[in-house]
Length: 183
Length: 152
Image (cartoon, rainbow over all chains, first blue to last red; front, side):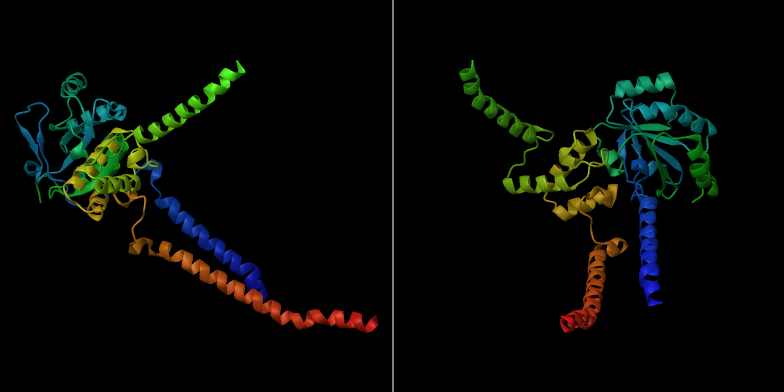
């Protein structure tokens, strides 16, 4: 009996334990380099940044309190941003949640011509020439999209081009669970 | 011809060594801080923070734009008198613990820190059992020898 235990059950037990540990490791490893944001469940960074379309105006997080909004980090130098642009236009058309853009380390003139050529899906676009605001949000590659609730808390983050799938599965259910305007 | 080659050898070697040296220093980051102590802390911090865009490089080694922005952040905060721990905490508040190449101790990864000790204990236990089993076998080992002696 003890021989059976040491020769058979013990190695099997060790194998099972190792398999479980490795399985947990694989499931929690950054999937294709996607890193869970520490911002989730926390207040979105407060910002007050120049407005791309009207530099005399500011885009301020304080003005966005009480409403859901999507915070979309983009740049004209970013391939994935061109890819998701059509999807952003559809989101704007749906009218469920406004998109605030963060034009990250970009040239204003190029950004403006991008918007006039491809269409403007944004309620307003803030500019971040130095890249400091993107760091506040823990952005590590564009495009990235954050969903912020009426209390100003980041409830979801999507890395990469926004797809119809993430919109219907991740964003829409969260926004429609609490009607816009209610707190 | 042969002589010329030989005379060229040393200057060439010297030139190669010199270039090798400069490329390491000038590779990515030419940042200089006002005093050696700050420079040393800057060096350590930028080497133990991860470049989030090219995840297997440190901030110091990465040529991408975001790494440069984060290095600027490290420099500015050092100049502002922040401690190394404050800077690490600032970074991980934005990018998560993943940005730290040297992991911190937390309840979630406690088992990982404890694992080497546990493995050592298991090893010691197995070792002890094997040795004990061998010593109990010893008297039996002598029996055939004694028999041989009697026969011979």
